[in-house]
Length: 316
Figure 1 (spheres, one colour):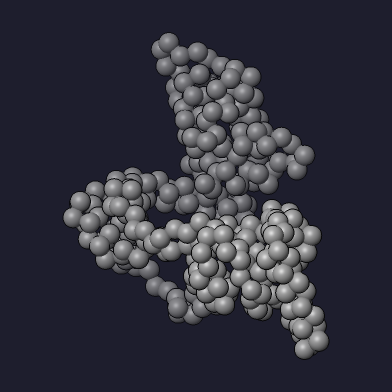
Figure 2 (cartoon, helix red, strand yellow):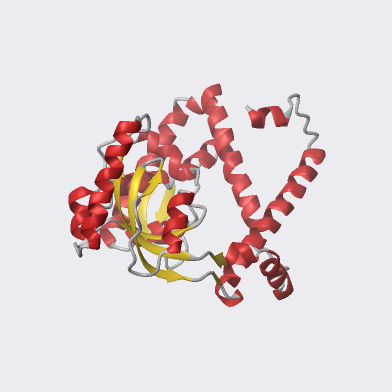
């Protein structure tokens, strides 16, 4: 959201995060005030509303304050439910207003660089509001549409076969010669012999494995699937029965001793469990298509002419 970014440049790095959020949320209010030359941007005091602050003729009521809080994203609204937080919010409104009024008094809003930033900000806010009002309600997605997408994209909703594995890795360098490779293999065979003799896999992994990420967890790699790991490693892992341990398997990383655990068969998720995901995706697609048509219409309406090659810009 633009207003959550722009005013942050006025903040000291050491200020509290909540304070930054408060000041950011009112930047568009100040921008609109400067651009539209309004003397008062707060709502007129309503009957029954409580007057919280005055800046000359400007009046800020509790209704104004609540309205500004409601404009925040839901994740931030909860931060301003308490009286203390609301007062801090109010103080920042006042601060931003008087700073903006003084800037305008000094005619900073007439400076070209400032006017350009104000124009860009207002254009962004208005464009965002236009899109929100025109394209927020994407109706027309039927049950048949959802079913059709599901049937045509079954692979997308299919979990491949997987197996849980632990491993012990004995590394050799990427430029390892025959001697280094042979030494790594010999060490891996020694470890395999200990395992065959009944040694605990997790203990040997902690002692010998060169995989620092997993050695303290018994060499646990979790569930793996084909296509996302070395083919040789994957082939060996899936060939094992639960509890079986492989002979050393060579990959570009080194030699692995693999222990297979639970296996999960390939599973296609039922339509009911992915229905909302599909609906959301179709709505986003519909929104994008409608947006493209609307942008094309507006380009024609406002006589847009691009004197560059858009494709060249994309590739650059």
